[in-house]
Length: 151
Length: 113
Ligand SMILES: [Zn+2]
Image 1 (cartoon, each protein chain N blue to C red):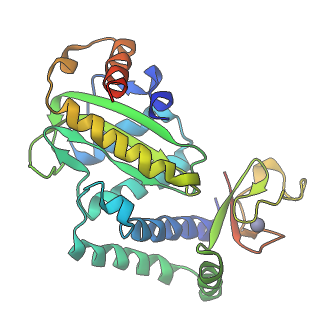
Image 2: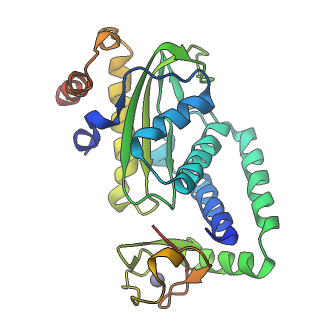
Image 3: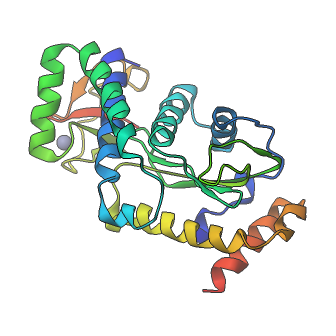
């Protein structure tokens, strides 16, 4: 599932955002949602952040939400070289983002399983630094795929 | 998009979030959930409720008690609450979501995805 969600065209290697709000907006861009939907999804993401940051620490955040306006599960991976103040648990800047979105209907709690897998890969990534130097989206996707296959 | 429809979507997304953060499977993932902040979320919910016509909100709650949600998406012409194909040609493409509609089979509020 997660392997299928990883797409080169949904990787941002040089995020410009400096704030949480800008980061969430930037991460939504590769999905090309119509503006009305995008606003609703952005709002749902902000509401999730309002009850606790999805910045899990060690430079990684996993913003996530389900919304009625979405018809499929989608993942966007973003990397910021300068780091984003995301109000993370350890208060450190976030360099790597996994944005996971899903529709409300969810056969077999696929969304939660995928979220769990992302959190697992994220923890592995938090012990590495070399992914910060990859400049090719294809290579970046392959790098994360490899980590997934190590299971 | 119809304004009340937009409010119902926001309400649905909040209700889904409030339910999700109580889900043990979600809790196990270890994301931060600050209990005291849930009050803010409930306040945001209340603001949406107050902006909705009372009859619409009451219907939303009735549907939610019955189906676990008050509004459902229509995907590929199928209501995702009852899985019945919507009668076609009821509304033209451009008019979808311009007014508040319900599923002709199960009665739930619908949003055309
Ligand atoms: Zn229906």
